[in-house]
Amino acid sequence: MRNIILLIQKYRNFLFFLFLESTALFFLFSATNNYHHYHYLSSSNSLSAGLLNYQSSLFSYFSLSEVNNDLMIENAYLKEQILNKNLVVGKKFIKSNDTIYRKNFLFKEVNIVNSQFKFYKNNLIINAGSQNGVVPKMGLIGTKGVIGIVTNVTKNYATVRPVINPNFGLKILHQKTNAWGDLLWIPEKNNFNSVYVNNIPIYTKVHENDFFVTSGAEGIYPKGVKIGRVISISKNIEDQTLDIELKLEENFSSLKIGFLVKNNFQEELNKHLKFE
Image (cartoon, rainbow, N blue to C red):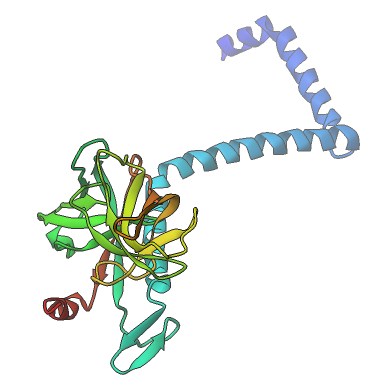
């Protein structure tokens, strides 16, 4: 107790100053002094808002992974709605807003864990395998267009042959005329951003910026998924066809996510394709 009294006596002038300063500040920013009270509240609110905004940004950063997964699931759901617009089941056409119809196509979101785009024969690896229901010849699409086809599957991973591989082949359609063509990637002529379309009849009215889309013929993809946009057209007089170059919708140098395509009627369709 004696020490406390001695301490107060030693610093009595400083403590008295703090008392007077606190009293002055109290009256200065009290509710009765409208001007200073208003500015005090404004400043404290700004500071609090700044701290809360920082806190929100910090928590948002740590929850990005969860948000991204939610968005991928939502994208897969939306693709099911959009790409199952009109389907034939049994003897009748049904619409996408029906609640009891069977969907042709289901979509599963996946991450692309390894992506090649500078090689002669490029391949991708996705983080889904046989335990996730993945089988060879499933299609893989991105947020904008076609990516590739599953070629090899293990328990937890699968290899995908992308469009930018010379062994990738697909029947496709000119969106405006429905003319059929063959998709072809030529390593000596194309890069990771372009591809050729062959066997389009020479009389077909194809223009720059027209889209080519999937035909749905093999059942690997739904009809109408974008592949690329026309950037050049030349006539092959000898074959009476057009040689068309497309700029791909998907950027194969920066692929991160994709959506596996499952055709619920693929097995039945394959029985018919055998006789072609």
